Image 1 (cartoon, rainbow, N blue to C red):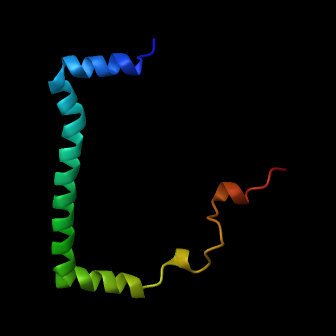
Image 2 (image 1 turned 90 degrees about the horizontal axis):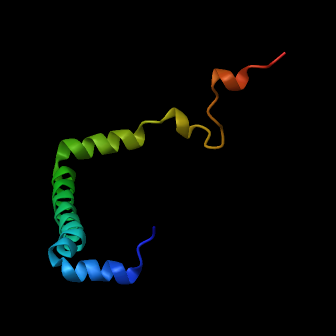
Length: 82
């Protein structure tokens, strides 16, 4: 059973509160989440301790950075069937 677009518009026309919750609710939630996330990010970036952590991680070599074309090897990959 599929719902046609006309039926969907009919439901939203008869139940405007449902359309408000299904359409405006996520939009408002996304806007509020974006604002709070941006505020949190700017606070963290202004913190000197956080800046030191970022700089230390950038200067510290990571084993995965040694050879970007190498694949991870697991013991199963190295086994030979005989």
